[in-house]
Length: 401
Image 1: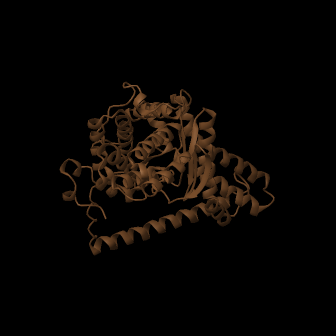
Image 2: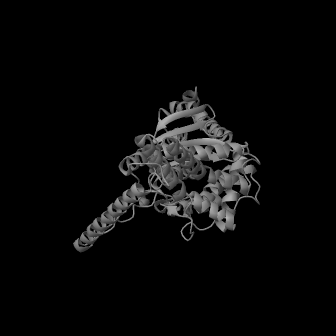
Image 3: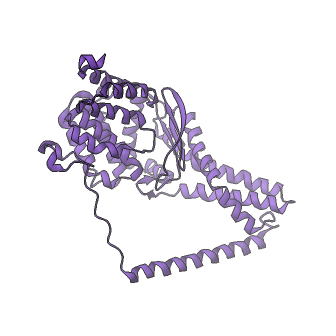
């Protein structure tokens, strides 16, 4: 259970996790009925469109299209959805690798592949609301930084789907003598085409930007695109082994207010980088400013992103505030995450054990040190190693030995 604000020293109460927002009031009965009727109407429209599509396919078969069965094509399109998502993320990966970017994680549904300094590992995570998969690749040094590099990376997923659609459609004509096979191939082509085109539309989904939105921002040179480019430059330095305190002052973007930002995720990432920069420089005042912004915005950010935010704020509580109660309040919120955070959670457990004088603090430090190779970049591994060394130095001599 998180401590009450009154249990924490006044200067640190602002860094406690914010309370859950009040639950939405239940809709009146007539509204629920209206929603139900609207769903019925929508279902009828979708059914009519499906029937119209089937009639259209039947009339076009053998002329503009290979002879296909609408039913088989629809089933094939649905069954191929997840393979299309895998191909989509593979397209991003191939495009990013071609521009020299470093892959750190992939995810499809609940499946995850994470890369640490010790290599790749597979694990099962939770689904991510708003997206069905992701490919996390980061620029390294000067590679993968240009607008062209980023545009190619964003285009890689949709292009993979569109290429799949073209190949499957061509094969459907080749297999025209087999109506069943032609129908399967046509459904595969239609599903890939739909996924590719939808991802090229510019929209946000529960805080995440579509590929089309990112491409549009790059094309227009929008403030969001410029901010993302600055973030990419900072991350490229990190992947190249440059620790936060050595990032150029002119490179780190000015932190926009998260609450008033049209893209809260981008603003939050700026504050996260600024928090890392300030913590590594020992600048408590700057770190506190970003920590307050991130704390206040916690419930406004995507659920899957919150564990990453919680680990950063728990780290601030451990390193800057040296407050066991604030750290203990954030620690349960660190579970989960888009990428593997187990090595950070182990470090936080060690920090909490030392702050509270736990008898097993030495064992907690050793357990955290054993997980350091899971870190995705050399800088994170080095910093956590330094933190653990400092913790070992704070142990009583008999316990440290």
